[in-house]
Image (cartoon, rainbow, N blue to C red; front, side, top):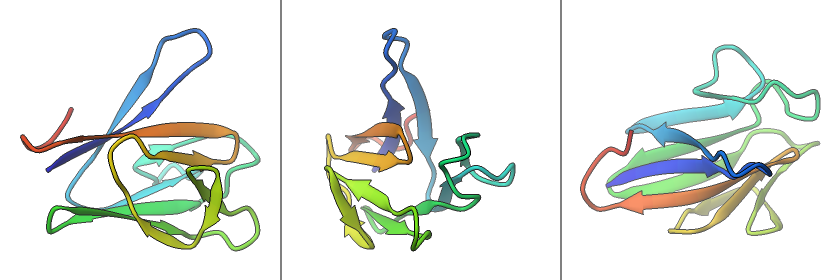
Length: 102
């Protein structure tokens, strides 16, 4: 299964972030797989783990939190077209049965 996050921008120039097999951390730190350099995003905000044909979103920040389809979440399995919000940044989940999406 392939998965990527689509950051939909106001000007229509979407940005794509492939999610690789294993652990993928989203946050402000330079060590994150998806880096969001905004003060309202914690250094390690959340993670998506991709394994066994499933993508699991886990919140890593108790104070700032992560939204899944507009609701606060601690852990959830992601599906096609889900919306993940990290601080003010929204990502749409794209899935493919064909393998990695670059």
